[in-house]
Image 1: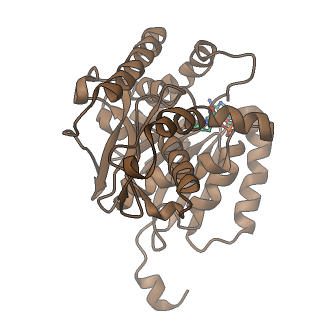
Image 2: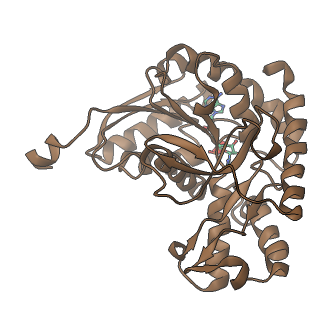
Length: 332
Ligand code: NAX
């Protein structure tokens, strides 16, 4: 980097990633360190959290990050202490938690992972930057974001989000494939609700190379194979790969945080965040809405028309998330 490049550099920001030695971490850290998320003139200090059984793997990950000699990567901290990992963090990726295994249902997953987010919410409250932006990836991510936020009482709840961007990207990928265009031609399809198989990819405002998606595709495909493929993609990846989505999840986490940090250029993006009663979603439920991002702020698009099919899908997601909230009421 020449002198000119160095002069344009900003002071480093602190980016915390939990579960950093896991599968998603292994893809995510390289994308963050290369500048894909926060910009090519934004130096980074990575603050990586693991639990004791993951610490040896984390040491190897830190060695490999150093061996990648990223110009933007100013420092790396690897720790099992959440108050060090979240100290002054400007952005946090909450990835660490148990992935669902074949023998677990959703209730088991909520019970296994919920408590993690109590401690992490409290630690974030104590030591993170007051402007911190948090994306929750670890499942069940909507409810885990709710738990973390409820335990971080001094930080505005809207700074805690959950990731439904992978569902959006899956929807874009399927539309691109079906219309035989590149994904760049697919705009403004977004996700309502929970990151689970009840999520709903809304095609009504989407465009494919400038044409309305609802003109390009028939409703049988949209409500049948399209919806089914997006909703069950996580399972299909597990069956095929023998492991849950990792690189695509990391890529979606980068997209989520990049758009929040740098703006979505007017495009609609899917972000799950605590409802303020939008579209009849009970206040506080962490629900995926159509959003735009500008100057580091998320804005929910509040006035889209809702037809009866979409309402049905929104209601299904409200019911599922209320049930999850009830199951963790002692953690809130
Ligand atoms: P891995 O099991 O490979 O890695 C998880 C890592 O988290 C492990 O290294 C583990 O030691 C660490 N960990 C566990 N508890 C921790 C804690 N309390 N503090 C810090 N670290 C902790 O799972 P991976 O494939 O990376 O998936 C991580 C999470 O993402 C899972 O909950 C998974 O279900 C979820 N996913 C979420 C997606 C989404 O779209 N929101 C999609 C992909 C993925 O399924």
